[in-house]
Amino acid sequence: MLNATQRIFASVLFLLLVSAMITGGALARLNGPSAVGIDGVRIFSRGIPISDGQFIAQTDNSFHLSELSGSWSLLFFGYTYCPDVCPMTLASLSRTWKRLPLDVQAQLNVVLVSVDPERDTPASMAPYMGYFNPSFMALTGNPAALKTLATEVNAFFARVERDGDLAYLMDHSANIVLIDPAGQYRGYIEPPLDPQRLTSVIQQLVSMPR
Image 1 (cartoon, one colour):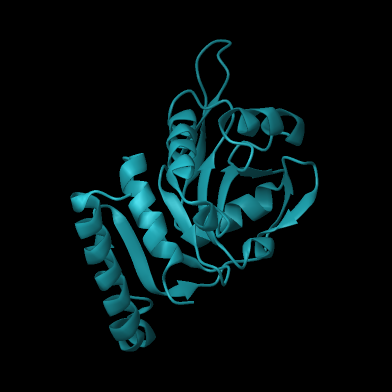
Image 2: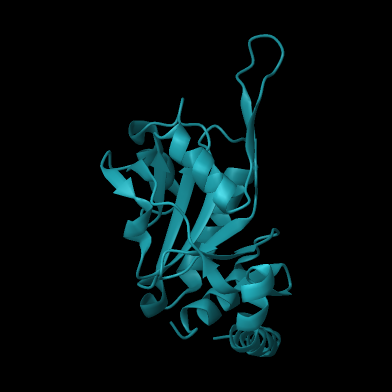
């Protein structure tokens, strides 16, 4: 159940989203998609198409981004060797997932896209994702598709070398990218990724008219 503060936030967000969807069309035709934001959540008035990149899932099967269509997807960029942001993000998303009703879970994908396909293989990513939540998905294995996707959703990643024998790190975006049921880029959620806030946002997203 949502408390009074959550209900107020959810109502305001929903009204803003509906308003953006109704009034954003004309602006979108002139200047690209307009957007509405509240509390670090940014929703575009219309989706932005993304390329149907082909990756390898943690199950070692080929996976196209178009297969995410039909549900909302929370997509973020990270890697298994990440010392802080990635495990914190996955932990927050897992706690959020457990707060969601089963019918909302059924309308949602949580996807990690590896920015380190050189080290992140299906064999290493499967147990890593399973540790946090076996319902979550991980994609790796295609540097070209990774670069294209990152560019299309305004994300970044870069290799950071370290002195001596220390393994390299990957700098990367920390936002959660929102992919709508049509398979298009629809907005993003900025950190901090508090499970209470995320629960309210997600429930409003899945209730939006398709």
